[in-house]
Image (cartoon, rainbow, N blue to C red):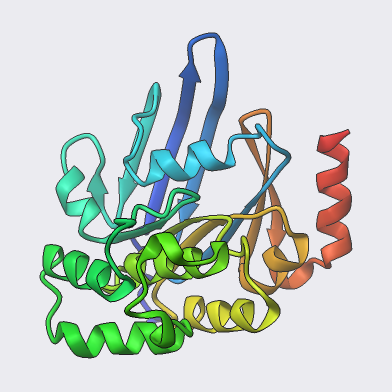
Length: 239
């Protein structure tokens, strides 16, 4: 007898997801089937639906129609289970501006009941080059430092699924490299991230999707693409 094939439960599944804001259609029947350990880059021009899709997957906004499941849990009935298993990093840092970086991490770490919290905070701060800013209030950080602090908050409970909206914003090359190392450090972690940078998509993702007018088009495996291929596809939909 040959080996028995075992079906792998998708880490993220979206079925015909739509989202409208009044007369404006942001998402038009988007389907996703993301396996554990995959890293999906979402590219597209402004208004293509990237941020909306990230927010819908993060349960920060309800889809107008369609179904979503994260880590095997149905978004319509198991939202609390899903929120404990995802990390979210958006343009809005979701951090408390008058607290320091470490105070924010301690607050969210306790919220998620992280074990050995001090050790976990130290690890995340060091990996994202934030240790020297740990006692600085968030409102006094640069744009790039706030973005890395937001990523630290998203990672504090070591979630199996990460949802990121343009995490490269404001980062210098050294910070980008640290971030890439962290996001690819776990072979089981699933990452979906929106980006405007074709080079970032190809270097960080395992698969690339192009959003255009709320529709998703599969560009294929990232290791079979060059940044120029992605750039041309992006320019085509951008006009």
